[in-house]
Length: 428
Ligand SMILES: Cc1cc2nc3c(=O)[nH]c(=O)nc-3n(C[C@H](O)[C@H](O)[C@H](O)COP(=O)(O)OP(=O)(O)OC[C@H]3O[C@@H](n4cnc5c(N)ncnc54)[C@H](O)[C@@H]3O)c2cc1C
Image (cartoon, rainbow, N blue to C red; front, side, top):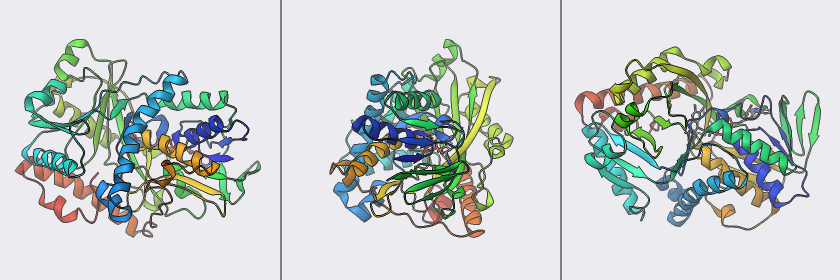
């Protein structure tokens, strides 16, 4: 087995296979260091979120299959916690759930609609709950909160600690990891590198946002950048004003995705999308930093929590995530060629990669389990449009999303612009 990419996808796959069959020879090839990609620098929401909605999964695979995917995602949050504990990975995991506050009437309308829709899928109070203003501010005291949604299905983690701990666990179970080893092409039976070919029965592509850099895969996913900032450690008095006593992860119901967590050392780590997409699906370390986006994140943070005005930001970074054309993550193995893949998680890969790794294990070993019958298995997303249409569409979508939030904070009503563009460009 050769796995290309040493992020969560590659490492969970290698780990799951090595544990299930210690006689397998499993090799991971990583262009830089393990955790160099999104896995080492994400927002640390280990959540049950899946990028494709239940409705879109049901449209292609049926209601039961869609709900099976949702149940598998919920169970995966606990599976990550179980494995981390079993392997002694100290990734600062705290399962406090996620609170998403509504801060104007338009956001509150969306929050209530989301819970009402969840009930039509038989998702009960134990899965997603509506909180009134008093309950919501009991968890998170963001300015202007009128209510919130809450799910228990999320654990805050330290992303780099998880990926490094996982790499060590892989090596303890006999996996060989070669860092600084870039794969130049993936072909049936081999991964090509400048130093020579690695031959294997199965080659797993686990390169997510970097996938377009591989030959023949330019339009498979688009790399979209998400950027983050982290504050200095905040004193207890400030946390008394903010909340998050159980390290709940948090967001609000705006259109453009924002996300935050209280870290184990009491910083506030906060991120969002909105950085531009780069023509030709380019990926470059220079794109990890964008001072305009960092300033916007800080302004949003202070708007949420005025007590943070003047607080020092000690870290700022970013990285590429991968988006499939239909926003559906997928995992699969082509038995004829021995080529396997997993990815397209958008911003929901922390837990989903674990499900991918266990699913690839069952596919490779030929085990007929519930996991291999989930609707994302073998799903093929269409290719993205050629340039410059791709660039125009994605950046127009980002702009429309930002404008929709501005419109709602002015009018307090659900955005007409968001409704008009929803079918063209998914929010966030
Ligand atoms: C800033 C940010 C915040 C995020 N926040 C969250 C969050 O809170 N919750 C959540 O669920 N998801 C989040 N995500 C998404 C999540 O981090 C990813 O979905 C997940 O880490 C993907 O893991 P991966 O292993 O598939 O890809 P990656 O972690 O990107 O790993 C791919 C690896 O492949 C290597 N590679 C690429 N090309 C080659 C090659 N040719 N040869 C060898 N190696 C190669 C790369 O160096 C990299 O290490 C976030 C992403 C970002 C960028």
